[in-house]
Length: 247
Ligand SMILES: [Zn+2]
Image (cartoon, rainbow, N blue to C red):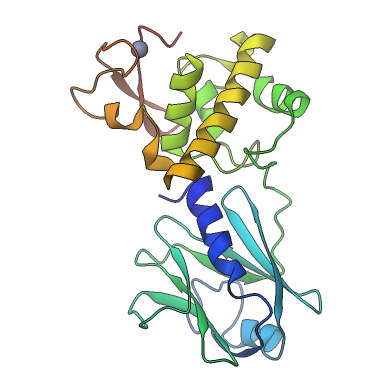
């Protein structure tokens, strides 16, 4: 499932679409393009050029020179392709450019979204650049399990199931621990682990590249101390951790 690194890769792909005049939009998939009726997104975009590509957490948007914004979300399995060599049966949304190229949302699961002028006010700050004081306040208040809090996109955005297990392992914090029990030192160490895990996954090619991810399996062992990892459902998600070094 796409997490912050996959969304950032999509944002980089979108940069190849900037500056090019839009001559057509296929927005006939009214589920992916909800709440818009067919033709609405086309009417908003045709004739314009995309000027900038942005991301917060897993949410993407591109701006046009007249101020209209096209929001894109990858859902559970979507990909952004700019100038694909073929047109696939899973293409849910398509923008055609004057030069013959195209921007495509390719999504077998059909859980991605394309929307004009989206409101991302409910999305928390990006996990990669949330400040220390803000992180302490956002993550440390209340009493949710720390895993659930880190997965809440309205608190900080971009972390999914794999990255959160990696981050908690790096920070040596058990996923079921209540955030009310975390010290300021715990919270600062957790934030550092978020930044390290995000940077590393961006460099290595995705959220599956974390050192702990291979241990997320039956018979999995902690890469730090060789202890058997435990598995439970926390925050609604299958969670792995090492009870020996994560407290
Ligand atoms: Zn361990």
